[in-house]
Length: 459
Ligand code: F0G
Image (cartoon, rainbow, N blue to C red):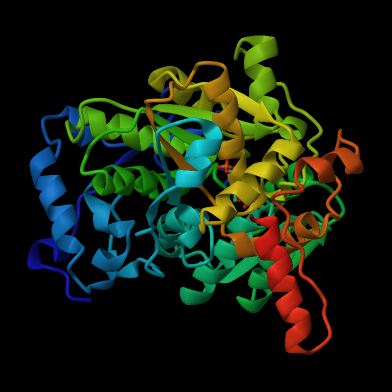
């Protein structure tokens, strides 16, 4: 695949995998990717960086920029382009890539007005090949699955991980098993895993129940687990933060705001920002804040009720099905990132999520409900004074608008019922935002009338 001579030389393994709690160095990883000593999660570490072999920051920036002009598959991937700070495959040509990453950074002028901030941008991770940020992590983790000679890969999912996994497994000639909660994932996501050929099992439980079943299964069958407890997933997801910094010409924003579900993504982004500071690529880190839906708020409650000491698991309920998670695996990693960057956690109501989603749409960007928690949360953080109006803010939009068209259509038709608010009150609140389709007779007069009425409404 046109690798340079130096890249063809058999690489020395460039990383270690360690427990985040007891620090144990795990050689051969357990099938559930947990520490064999204490059961906590693992993370990838680069021991060479402390042993005087840290890459030079100026050289990194130059190499990464240079690769943007290359058509080699690994360079064209917005993940593998950053391979100096990723775990190394024994054979780089084994990487399974769909040219993930390279996602746009958009200005959000109308949303900035709604949130009362001056500098607001969105990094749209929904512009990845399967429509969510999961692709950036999937390309790395599934490549390691192939390196380890697995035929089967599997995940429990609220829909996006499964769509991504199914696509990458298909590309890599591997078989994939999708475990999802019956009736609780958006149609766009379910249809993807079917088309990509996954064995798709809809279990009569919620996401947390699906995780339990899969954990049992991986002990009974040779299946490689691709949930975000897999530390290689987070390594790939890290690259969105590096790409963001590059898009900002290495000017660090004051705040980055991320939706929180299983809490892998904010942990991955935080790891990247901290690593970039450690390597001297940047001098500071943004405050990373996590936003949860009120009905799926275990991290919020963990901090407010237990001061972060133990997880408060909840029975999750939210229309933002991607983050309908009550027992998040990566809560400790997430807390570490909040502490290390000075970020906070906020919760938002279903009505706030719906309004924010339509506002992001009105900027011509759009996203799925789980991503819109970021704007809804930002508004609260500005009101509380945590974010100052003159500070720069980047929202991480995690999923594409078309993942969940049913939610959007119900919203605009005025058919969306949100928990804890009367339908009439919600319809009144969103009246100006809603754009229901109009059914008319097939003649120009009828359409003209609709046009004129619209002009009149807009003054
Ligand atoms: N946004 C979207 C669109 C997601 O799909 C997810 C998670 C999140 C945010 C939350 O990210 O879990 O890293 O905190 N979706 C997973 C899935 C759980 O199965 O697709 P997180």
